[in-house]
Figure 1 (tube, rainbow, N blue to C red):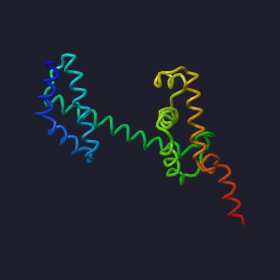
Figure 2 (tube, one colour):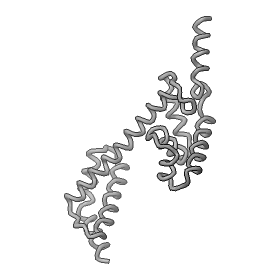
Figure 3 (cartoon, rainbow, N blue to C red):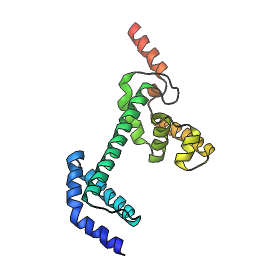
Length: 176
């Protein structure tokens, strides 16, 4: 019980300071509030393990969580760039003008499908690694990836999935 009281006291004393510190770096109230809650969740866990928590520890933890969030955002941007450079199913290069379309298609997918596509195509994980991350068998991971690819293909415009058709159509239009 003492730990709960301690974390409540820490929260009352430092939550505003931590939230302001985070907001000055992320410029988004919702993200700042979420990260502030994460800081105090981690503090509670560490305090139960015997770590002495003070304002400096809270700020360092906030800084680390901000960096994690920014890395996640950076990964998403890199994923979109990578997907625009190679067709998801064929692996062949295609026009750079479709990056917005790839992002739109990804946004339409279920979170589980988007996650496995990101892990496979951005992070470059193979079935064995996907299985570990997703806590399932290698066969299940391969099946989930295949289903996610199919979901992407169903929602994607035809020219996105078969860039060679687009190139042929563009050449025919130019010749005419």
